[in-house]
Length: 543
Image 1 (cartoon, rainbow, N blue to C red):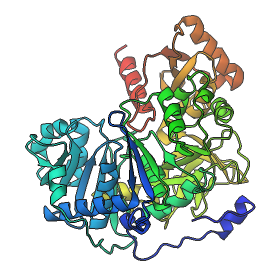
Image 2: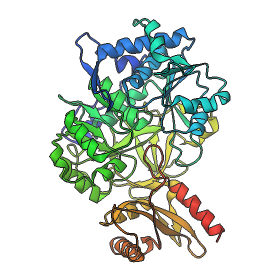
Image 3: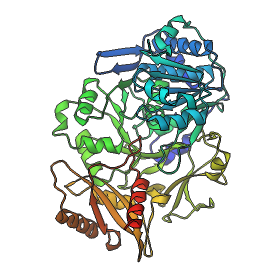
Image 4: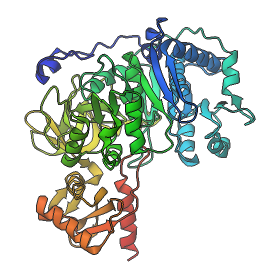
């Protein structure tokens, strides 16, 4: 854990990793806090049956029973266990049980369709799956394609033809001796969101939890503090929900709010945070943009202490709204599935520079490098990279040694994102390496243009890509989702073009503007620019 010092540099200099040889996520995030005091671990609101509070003591007993249940059905150390569940107590129990068993957890997003599930379950060789009655149908569609899947446990599964979760849990003992895992033993496979290419399984070790702690502390303004309570609308199947919130919070002994919202409702989000006195949150940019549409949010009476956001750049306008709405700056952070929470802002530790995603989180050696892994001078654009060894870094891509090797240039893990770093160590995101637009003699990142367009009063969301052009190779095109009630017109398109031309540069303005009713998104809420580029390429070919 970080020790706060007077300055950022002093905080960095005072920090050193202390990763023990033996470490188990399940023990660290649950068992060590189960001291008989009844200290709350999870607060669960499902929208149907009220509110339930689960203590660390109860969580330990339940996860012990689940570990025994898996072991009793022949699931052993090293085997993969799929967890296809929403935010609910059983999801946390399943993760903790798999870690204590010495298995490898495979979180699966409930909005995945059969093909997405088939790829992950098949590629990982999952031996068991824990799901519920709402999602078992998708699994049954692909059952014949999953020869390694030996056991399926279904919550509310009576009559489904599969093992009923409650019945099997009732047979199990609540006493379990966790496997004495090494910190470097595999614990978790999280598949990439698929922004580009087919999703790959990032295999993480038990140490990944320790690697995340400083990256949670910084944007959450030196979490934990007395009275803290953490919530995120991000699903626990993704690294942002699981390792930015759930497991680090439990590891720190801080309760986590779980909510089974079927769809993100910005008004309901404000009400939820107020009702449960949420103090800390991870709110993705998409969520914040939707919350911005709520009239007079202060009427809900929330009292937040810290908010972190990451995944897409917020932009100056959103940062201003967030500070006015919550009374403090939202701290942006940066990372990816393979190596997360590498860079962050922390208003209470150092000044935020608008447009920057922050400075390297203490403990991580982050730099902008060339494709060959050579560090570049301040201000020069290149690839954002992190040096190994690093406890937050993946072990490998599961069963893909060539892809693993390609991810590195020497000892630098290349994120695939482009950016710059100034003389004071502030990082500036430009875009995915393959999002860069080559127009004439210019290489244009979409981030600045999107930040500009979204400040237009008629725009709710926007995605900017390069589309084929016979003269310039590519030209800038903006796909614009207008705010409710705004009519898309040629006049509005011209107004948006002028808005950018006047605020950025002539070569950056979108020569084409298309109004849309929705934008293609990954399951983690990132805009899939590749889908838009592919669509435009087809249009150009077909005339």
